[in-house]
Amino acid sequence: MNGVDDRTGQVRPVGRTSAGIGRVSGPARFLQSARILAWRNVHNFFTNPALLLPAILFPLFFFTAFAGGLSRVQHVPGFNYPNGYTTFQFGFVLVQAAAFGGVFAGFSIARDFESGFSRRVMLATPHRSSMILGYSVAAMVRAVVVVTLLFVVGLASGMNVSSGPADLVLIVLLAMAMNMLAVLFASGIAFRFRTIQAGPLMQTPMFMALFLTPVYVPYELLSGWVKTVAGVNPLTKVVEASRYLLAGMTDEVAIAFGLCLVVGLVLFGWSLSGLRNAERSGG
Amino acid sequence: MAHASAFDQAREIARRSVVSTMRRPAQIVPALIFPMFLVAINASGLDAATKLPGFPTDSYLTFALAVPFIQSGIFSLLNAGTDLARDIETGFMDRMALTPISRAALIAGELGGVIVQGVLFGTIYLVVGVAAGSGFGAGAAAVPLLILLAGSIALALGCVGMFVAARVGDSEVMQSTFPLFFMFMFFSSMAIPRPMIEKDWFRTIATINPVSYLIEGIRGLFIGPLDWGSLAIAFGVCAALTAIFLTGAARALGARLGR
Image (cartoon, rainbow over all chains, first blue to last red; front, side):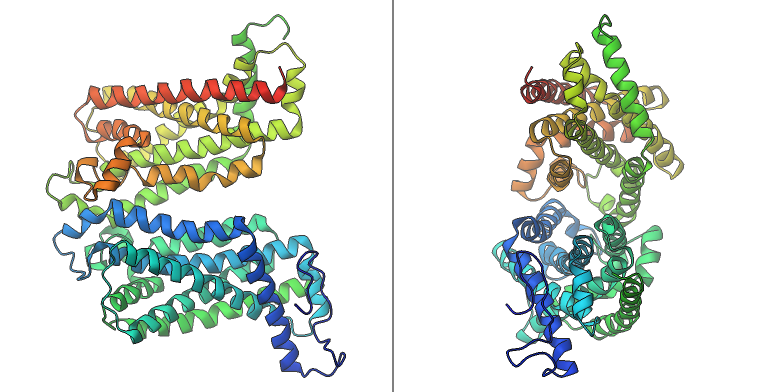
C-alpha cells in the first residue's frame, strides 16, 4: 500500500507518486489520502480478531436473543407485521448493526489520535476532511460485511423475506445511510476528545437512540413515555422502513431516507467542526 | 495484623474495598442508571406482552423489575474482577502475599464492596420501582428477603468476577468479558416467563441458565404472593455459585501468588 506502513502506522506524504510530489491534483490528493486511511482501517479490521469478532458477534447475539426469546410477542393482539417475529427483529438488528459499525469507526479515530497516528496524518494531508471520508468508507465496508453475514444467518434461521431485488438494494442503502450517520456522530466526539476514554460518549447515546424506537413491538403497541419519544425519534422511521422493505413494502422508505439526509447534514457539520477543533489543538 | 483473626483481616480488606468502590462514581453511576433506563424502556416497549394469555401480571414494570438486580450484579462482577485484576497488576496482591494474611480473608474482603453495592442498589431499585407504579406482591414483610437476595446475587456474581480476574490477572481482559456475561442475562427468562418462551431451543437454554432462577426468585417477590420454592432455588443458586467460584478464585490466586 502506498502512503502508510501498516505495522508502524508511519505516514509518507500522500501526494507522493512515482512521478513525485506536486504532480497530483487537489481533488486527487484528497481522494488518495481518504483511500489510504480507508484501506488501513479495513485492513486492521479484518486482521485483528479483537475488532472483527465483536462487530460480527454482537448483532448476531442480539438477533438470536430477541428473535428467539421474544417470538411469543407476535401473538399479542394488534401485532400485524406480516412476515413474523424473526423478520421483524431482523429489521431492527440490521439497523443496529449498521449503526454500531459506525460507532466502532469513532473508536478507531480516537485510538489513532491516542497513538499519534492521526497527528502524522494531519501533518501529511493537505485536505484533512479526507479523514472523515476515509474513516466513513472503511466503516461502510465493515458494515457491508456484517450486514451480509446477518442476512445469511437470518435466512438460515428461517427468516421470511418478501423483498424484491430493488427492495434489497434499498435495505442495504438504508443500512449504509444509518452507518454514515453513526460515523459522523461518533467522529464528531472522537475528533473533540481524541481519546478512547470517550467511547461511552459515542456508544451510549447511540444505544439509547436505537432503543427508543419500536424495538420489540410495532409503534402502535408501544405505551407510555417510550411511545412519545419514539414518535419524534428519527430512527423510528429508519427501523420501520427496514421492516417494511423486508416485507416487500415501501411505506416510510422515502421519509426514512429524507430524515437520514437531513440528520446527516447536521451531523456532517458536527463532525467537520470536531475536525477543525482537532486541527486547532494540533491533533 | 500479624495476630489478627481471619475475620479482622477480611474486615480490613473489606473496608478498603468499600471505600475504593464508593470513591469511584464512574464505576457506580453506570451500574445504577443503565439498568433502570433499560427497565424503563422495556416496561413501555413490552407492556403489550402482558396481554398474552397466561402472563403472570398486568404490569410489565412489575415483571421486569427483577432484571436490574441481575444487571447490577453483572456490573458488580466486572467491578470486583477489575479491582482484583488491578490489585494483581499493581503489585498490591504481591505485597499482601508477603504478610501473614490468609488467602480466604483477602478474597472475602475484596468482595465487601460488591455486597454493599448489591444491597444499596437493591434498595434503590425497590424504592424507585414502587414509586414508578410497580407492585410488591410478597408484602412489606418480604422486603428483607429481597435485600438479602440482592446482596447474595451480588456476592455470587462477584465471586465469578474474582475467579476470572484471578485466572487472567489483566483488568483490560476482565472488562472485555462484559458481553459474555451480558449474554447469560439475555438468554434467560428475563423478558418472558420460561413456560411461555415459544422456541424450544431458547427455552432449553433458559432452563439450564442459572441466571433464570435468580431472576425468577426476585420476580416472585415483586409479583407475589411469596413463593418459597422459587426463593429457595434462587438462594441455592447463589450459594452454589459462591462456593464454586470462591474456591476457584482462592486456588487461582494462590497459584498466582505462589503460596
